[in-house]
Image 1 (cartoon, rainbow over the protein chains, first blue to last red):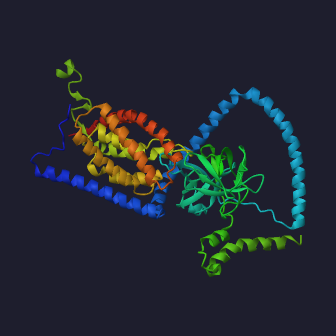
Image 2: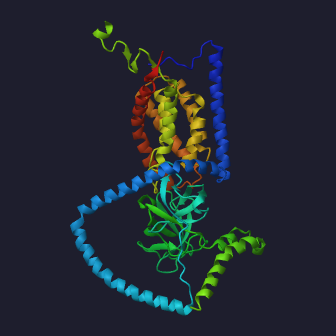
Length: 321
Length: 185
C-alpha cells in the first residue's frame, strides 16, 4: 500500500517552503561535499588536523578495545595449541635439537663478527624505538588501508617514521596528532617500499595491491630470477626504513616480478614500535629539486648530520679505554 | 474499573499513557546517535588485508531513511557524512558528498515507487550500497585496479546480508525511541 506521503504539502505555504528548503540544503550539502572531496584529493594533508583531533578523541576507547582484541587472539591461540599439542611436541623436540646446534654455531659466528668489526672499527648501531604502542584501529570499511596508532607527537612520533612489529615492517606514519597517529599500511595501494631479496642483491619495489598482498616489481628487467618462497627485506633505499627488516614472502610469479604475502600482518600484531627515520639526510636530498643546490638547505643538513657527529665523538671517547 | 477488566487499557506499545509522554530528546537523538556509532564501528576490527566490514554508518543511515521515512531531514547526509569522514579513512568530503546524494536519491526513488515493503527496501539498499562502495573506492584516491575491484565483492555481499539485521535493529530502536519516559504533571 502506498503510504500517505508527507511530501504532499498541500496548500500550506509553510509546508511547501520548508520542503523546498530541505531539497536546497541537501543539494548544497552535496555540492560542498564535492568541493571538499576535490580539495582533499588535490591536497591530501589539508584536513589532517581535523582528522587528527578526531582520532585523538577516539584513541583512548580504541586502546581499550585493542587490548581486548589482543587478549582474545591469545585465548584462541592457546585453545588451538591444546588441540594439536601431542604432534607438535614431537616435532618441536626434533627442531629444538637442531636449533641448539645452530645456536652454538651462531654464537661462534657472532663472536667472529664482533672481532672482525672491532678490527674494522665499526660501531654496533642499535636503533632505539621512538615509541612502542598498540595499533588501536583500522579503516576496515574503506578501500584505503590505514591503521591508527596510540602514540603521537607527544611521544616524539613524526611524519614518515617507519612502523614495525617484531616480525617485520608494518607501514609508515602518515599523519601525526597529539596522542595518536595514522599509519599507511604496506598493503595500501599507494604504498611503495624499496626491497631486496634476502639472499642476494636483487632489488625491487614492493607495492601494495589493495587486496592484502604486495606486488614485487623488479627494477632490473630481464629473466625473472625470483622463486616462490623468496623472502624480501627492506633495502634501505629512500632513507625511510633501515635495511634488513623482513617484508614479504613471494607466493606467485609474474612476468616482471611476483606477488608476495606480507610477513608482518598488522591484524596479528599487538604492539608495534615506531623507529626513527633511518637516513634523514637522504630524505632532504630527495626533497630538493634537481636544479637546486643541496647546500642551500644548510640548516637542515646540519640538523641531519648532528647525530652522526655525535656518534663519532662517542667513538673517539671510547677508544682510549 | 476498566483497568481491572483490562490491565493494558491505559497503556500503548510505548508504556503507560497516564502521566507519561515521549521524551523529545530520546525521540530525536536516537537515530543520529546510532548512525554516528555506526560510523565508528568499522574502526574496531583490525582488518589490514582487505576492506571487509560493511560501511555501518551508511547502512544505518539508509536503514533509518527507508524503515522510518520522514524522520531524518533531507540535509542529514551532510553533518553525518562530515563525522564519518573524520574516521573512515576516505578523503575528507567523500561521505559528505555521497551521503547527501544518497538522501536525494532515496527521495527520488520514494517519489517514483511510493509503495513500501521490506523486500523493496532491501532491493533499494542493495543498489545504494553497491553504488556507494564503487564510488567510495573511486573517490578514495587509491589506484583502481582489478585486485582492488575484486576485494569489494565480499564487502558488498556482507553488506547486503547485514542490511536486514540493521533494518530490524532500527525498527527496535524506533520503538525504544518513542518510549514514554517523560513524566507529565
